[in-house]
Length: 176
Image 1 (cartoon, rainbow, N blue to C red):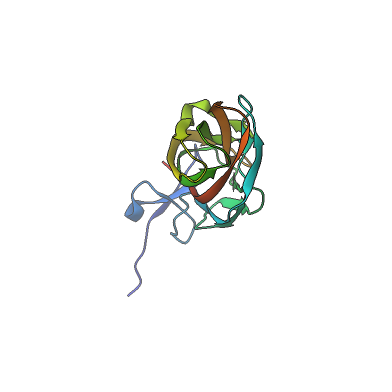
Image 2: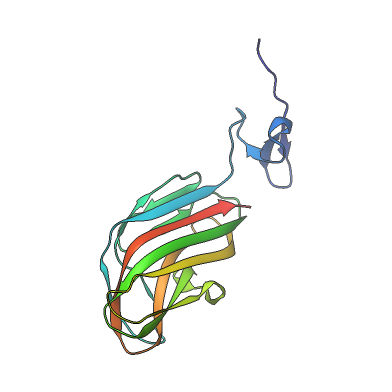
């Protein structure tokens, strides 16, 4: 028996919706079009000289996790790029662990959009010795248009210049 699924196109957003899937956008065949993207660290590397007041992108090589309407640039700390033509709202969250290149430093860690750190997402983490593992969780709501991208940046908020190595990272964006 063939099941017929009613599909309706929303003229305001040009998205196709199915009453069986609630308010979730679907393609013509009824498959989900909810946008999401994920990247995670696979090869840690020391982030260059981090100086107070100058946020820079983390180093290391990432891999793509699950993605739909996103692409992942895997080198130099990674970049999660939104590829759909429709502007959407996303909950972006991440978690990372790191070690510091020097003792007694406080790092500010941010989600960055299009190469600019979003201060609303800053989390500070103090490390007492260079061998401490610092753990950080990041969250924020972002409106993303086509080719907007997300990265992770770091800054020193207390202490002098040093390096850091992100050992583990997972960054994901999920349409809300």
